[in-house]
Length: 298
Image 1 (spheres, rainbow, N blue to C red):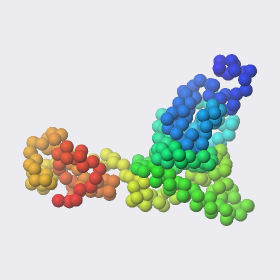
Image 2: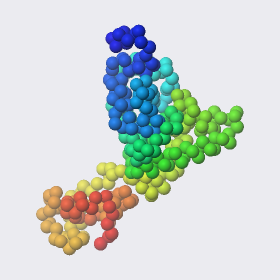
Image 3: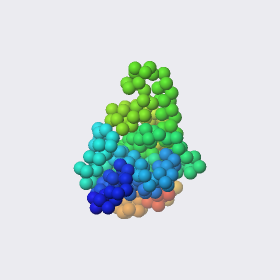
Image 4: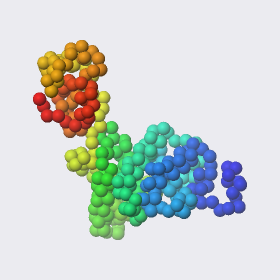
């Protein structure tokens, strides 16, 4: 508030006024909006110049997204809602911070893959919000993750372009109910941005298998994908005749140490199951050099 008092003689923008209130919330938004990822997104995808950055519009966009995440996609995103959010919220939940940072990383990766010469300056605020929201869907997924950011961006722009073309056929009296473009042009209205998100999420679910197949997404390894049974080591040692696939001896004592590990023959990302028929005992070094690739059965 001292900063506000000292600057009363100079007009301040809405977001400058909000950010002048010192709190962990304002600090988080300032740091993330002006981080390497944040600046990559706002300067490349939105075409914001260094002069525009001084107006704090990019911080306001991020603040709106933070508000959506913190309040579970329920609030409106107008001036009063943002003012109230800043005044009543000293800090956001840790889960909100992690989600927002994850979203910024995915979208910044998309922008970097496009390259600095491929600025998408015509990206509207609605487009960017939609991109943030669908990226958040991937941040929250426990089973799959983004493997190719550029391919995910291509899916997004092709899908939204298709939806925008469909919107041209919607009659005026049905715009609010059926027009994707109408919703996208009103990103501060909660009912509108939820409609955008739901339409994109439904298409993402339809296309998920194709996106896994073409490498856009990949499956995450979970605790259920880890071989940890000591008895399985002994069984595999017997099934393999005490040898690895190259014919080298595996000392029985190695199953008591970290010298050997159980690996998926067909990797998890390629659909391999965590069962003994897809398991192979191998040295730790061999397993590390193989990485996430699949092997042929032997």
